[in-house]
Image (cartoon, rainbow, N blue to C red; front, top):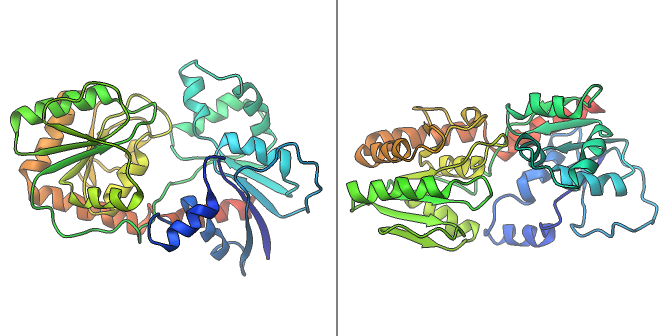
Amino acid sequence: MRDVEVYYPTHLDTKGWELQNAQGLVPDKWPYGLNQLAGHLSATSARLSNLAARANLSSTRRKKVVDVALAWEEDTALRMLLHSKAKVKLAGVIWATDRFASHKPKAKDQIIRPALRRLDRLWVLSPAQVPFVKSWLGPNHPPIELLTFGVDKDFFQPAEPVRSPLLFSLGSDRDRDMKTLFSAFEIIASARPDVALVVQTSSQLPTPVGVTKIPRVGHKDLRSLYQSATAVVIATGTNLHVSGMTAALESMACGRPVVITETAGMGHYVDHNETGLLTPVEDAASLASAALRLTDDASLANQLGAAGRTAVEERYNTREMAFSLSEMIERTL
């Protein structure tokens, strides 16, 4: 039996998450479904330790040696290196790639780079990140692999076909392009005033006439919004870590097509004209045209949505992601 320590970012209350999952309020028992590693690792099973999010970094208490420690992203990997006595250590690399690609590294990145070189294996969620991380870390870097991201296909489920046209957008991360999104929604509101336009965002940009802006909602309400939408529309700026990927896959899991900016790596998750529609960066007219295409053609929207659901069931789900991660762990051991 493998002993595996799972480290999470400090903002995640993993115990609270588990309680909310039992109440049907959030997807997966643990964030990103990493609890499912227990069913994949080795011929038997793994004994997982869900590490406290706010562990005391100054603690000198001796920890037992375990087989594996893994951290979801690079910031958490620093805490893992301080605490863990695991035989092998793995981590994901997400945000640092875009900070260095945009020549805007933070002070902590000078620590993160040598720390990542000390790990036994790394993964990224976008194919565009693989060559960049290899170059960034330099010669003799640890093995770097693409891990295909997934969502909880049992939590995010399709509902009855959409009746009234509704376009929904969400997200407030630094790579969301709200200027382009709002410009596209202005075009749509002018062409099709009967289409409801709903945006969940914390952006301070003026909200266009005809657009309803809502605050952040919980996963259960978010699922209802996906299910009610004709399509989910997301605009992002140029980035390597596939901003909008989670929302796209959750929408697909709910059987609704996504219209999203084609940044590097997005094609790995959204198949143009098959599970969704991809548009150029900062092109409001193309984004609006693609969204209108789906509001005008319910048959096409339902076709893309059904194909998206199939893709999530077969590939883009947390069970498949945990299986891929477990194979990565076994190769490292």
